[in-house]
Length: 177
Image (tube, rainbow, N blue to C red):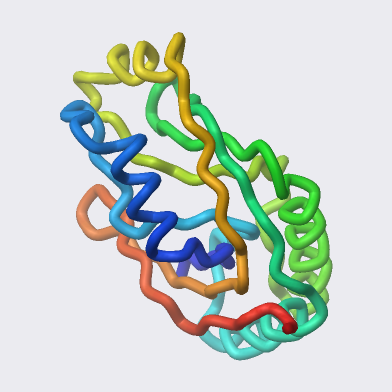
């Protein structure tokens, strides 16, 4: 199965992001499960799920909550993904990624994704006919900053449901108080 660890985004921040960034964007197929991925695992055998979950719990117990700020929209993949840029908390996220990557790669026969990690919140994927509108949407606008506290990580499994991915939480772990 596909799996990933993602920072929890508080419900009020999700609502604010949706209202400011995706509302009224008819060209955008919004992400149903808004999240900020910390580590993506392309292929996770069921027998490793518990060990990966324990690794995430261990990492969370050794970290404290921190603030994230985001402002501005960009796209990647030739307009296939529209995302919210991080402006604060970037170093914390990169360090969590590094620690999780190291922890999970200690588990026998498991390799986490090795491509360059770029923290972002996916806002949605433009419908293919509207990719040019996505590029227009990401340029020349004044965006207001959104800030929120990250207080933990959730571990998800992800399955393709006929063209889009459905994410299901396996477990959630708070950061240390």
